[in-house]
Each structure stands twice: as structure tokens, then as C-alpha cells.
Length: 95
Image (cartoon, rainbow, N blue to C red; front, side, top):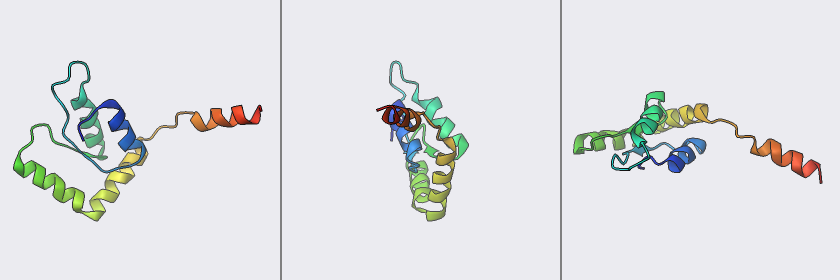
């Protein structure tokens, strides 16, 4: 995955283990700090300058069942409630 705002937050929300290779050529979207924060927290892997060895190493980690479980666990710790369930209950209850 690159590291766009929506894609990044969706994979965190759904606890999907990912390898990020951020797009460094965007004009306004600074993807590098976004995906690095996920990696530093342990929720994903980030490759800034891709090379064969780093890509092979990242894929090997993603193929490890235990490592993927760890990524999913860290992703779930990054999730934040957004209030959608609460407000929809208020709306439904007021009908």
C-alpha cells in the first residue's frame, strides 16, 4: 500500500497487516510520517526506499502467522471511536 490518508486509516480500522511504500512525490499529502507512525507503533511495516532485500524481508515477516497477529493487535490499539454508533442510536431512538 502507498500511504494515502483514507487507505492508511482504513487498514488500521480493519486491523489489516500491511507493508507501506509511501508515495514521496505527492504535492500535499505527506505520506512518509503517516506510515512511519504505524510502523513505529508496530502496526505495519514501512519501506521508504525499496530494494530487493528490504522487500523480501518485509514479505517474509508478513508471511509469518505470529507476526501478522502482532500487527493486527497493534492496529486494534490505534483504533479510535468516532461516535457514529452513538449518534445513529440517538437518531433511531428519536423516531
